[in-house]
Length: 536
Image (cartoon, rainbow, N blue to C red):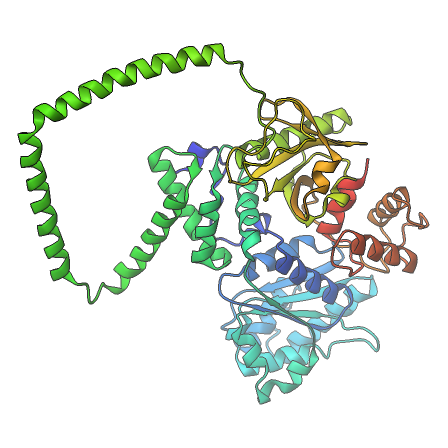
């Protein structure tokens, strides 16, 4: 309903697990890293648990889209199945063609084992991913454990990922499943989004849906969203979807705190309507309505009695307003228009950031129609982002109206109010940076200004691959060679071999440590984003 009004290609807050909308918060990034590590290193069993609506299913869909073509995958999302149905679905998902006469569990297992051996012989891997695993019966879980016995002398032939709600941990901890629980080598508990990630989550979904930057959530709106959702993505989607509907009905493009609170009340009202409203103090409400009507009647009689005085008062005020307006217009004509502010709001900074990205791509002679383009944010200190090579924006959270930083160009004032403001940086120069003001003009900002602030939220546009494979030690791909070339340009001592050996692994860890990334030696999206930002 509201998609065309806001310029979206599709609804940004659908509850379906679309992997394009996966927002890689630190928790989701770590969960994905655990999954990829367990699969690539052939750890056998992997367990991912989390509360309802934390994004587990979306994470699973995204994982399948990022696996290498040599990795065969099978996804089971219906966990209310028998042992035989489990084997039948696994073979069907792997594309194993069985003879019509195959009936027994042994025949299904033999066919699966033959498929796994053939896959392994050509350097491939196989992944079985089971969603909603907390609903599996003990007998089916025991059958899954037996599948892990399909292995060579050194390697597991199949990697089994169990994804489920927090109850899955309790289920696996039971004495009857102790053998299965001991085989799980990689575990991760997926937690809700932190307060600081809610804004990034919402903005990410708006961009993926095709938003043009004309829709803005206020800071009060984000706070209200977090208070209600406590960082649960499913709740965030529900309240944002309802808030956009309210904004559409009111023909607004700014989502305020009041709109979010109205959306929350509507959602809670729907829930209350389903269960019935009990214990409402109707007598107290009726008394309040009676008192209100009485006050309105008294006010009406008083207004009629003093109508001449009241009309005269408003007539005088109208004359004064006309004179005051004329004086103000004359003074405005005599006053020289001040320079545009260098502090931008959320909407202006997002639109400007994407425009700078396109300008930079054209300047470099590259195409600008990447299929996967989004924003990525980090909390880092100025000494790091002053080394950037691509446009970015900085959220300055400690600007006050009384400040007047000297490094600003003539005529540029500080933040006129206490709301968050952004600096949109076109490029970094030797003595500071070139920022873009509200009129789109370049303004020089001195390096000393950035030094006066601590860690800030920095965001830039990052083109990423739709089907991505994280780089880990031992891999040999063209992507590894590109990483080595970037490291070498940054001053790291690496050989351009295209092989992810120990020397490259150590350099990646040093790079991650320096920029405050998780020093795991895995070149994932966040590390890639930094390589992109620091490369010419």
